Image (cartoon, rainbow, N blue to C red; front, side, top):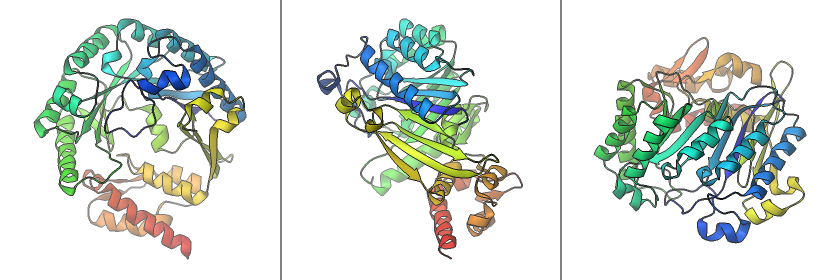
Amino acid sequence: MKPSGLYIHIPFCTQKCRYCDFYSLTQHSIAQQTGFHPYHPNPHFIERLLQDIRFFKERYAIEAWRTIYIGGGTPSLLHPGDIRSLAAGIREGQMLPVEEFTIEANPEDIHEEWLAACSEGGINRLSIGVQSFDNTVLAANGRRGSKEKTIQALETIKSRWHGKLSCDLIAGLTGQTAQSLSDDVRRLIDYRIEHLSLYGLCSSEPLPETREDFISELLQQNTALLAANGYVRYEVSNFSYRDKHRSVHNQIYWKMEPYAGIGPAACGTLVHEDTSGGFTAAERFEGIKDIGRWMTAPDRTSVYTYERISRKTFLEEVLLMGFRLSEGINRKDFSRRFGADITAYIGNTLSRWEKSGQCRIEPERTYLTEEGLLFLNRFLVDALLELDTNAAR
């Protein structure tokens, strides 16, 4: 298989943020279930990750890791020595250079030794979960950091880090105002970070319509603010300074290219193509959400679930992910994968949205306009409905 992305999930946190629904274990249960101790060496956990990475690379004959992303949870709880060991183990036998190697971190965990370990391990991109600079907002949402610690972290990174930097903010947090979010965005603009992600708050429970509208307004206002300061929106929630610092790894997700997911609750999708690049099959696997069993099971196939992805489901996911990108979907690539142009599948939807000025159909690509992206979910409902209608004929 051609070079693929690699996602590694570190499922540990010192405390759970109130808005987060990612799988993670908090400090009260970490040591009891796994023996993992934050900020201390945890060689057994690292070796388990490396064992699974080697297993999947061999099982699927993956040529090399094109990108690597260590997420969580809170990867910055890893000891510097463990970061070095994990990075060295991943790159062992790697014949091609890793194009992008990212690790997530909380601002309050940043220090010089940790940054040095990242650099020595070949990590060249940091993704910092700022979320907010407002101490009242941070406390209301269960964040353990502070404005002061975040500023200190950014100053340390500015003076000691030579790779790229991405920061996350969330619109719609409890206690947040339009002014506080715009202040947060301006502060990050002042640091001239290369990449910024601005996410609307997600909730497992439906939010009141008034709050959904408020979040939408926040996103529109701050998208405009970022654009005015040189940050190009290349995906619904992601901005690249002067469009020179797009996340290579995340584009693998959005373009439905192959990647492996390693660790408890980590998800991967491996795509198989024929010699001309046509879709033949896809397989999705996910680590079990049982850290005790994941740590101890001798048979590593037993700690991941497997699912075959049908051609129709894969096509649906290509639409769902591809139209998140400002560049939309490349028509030549789509035809190569599915044997026909995208207009053969959702042509009526594309034409209708183009007439309303919310979509563009060009010779090389089809995409939603800035206005169209505001109604992305509605567009996707229309597209999938037409896809189902055509499939039923």
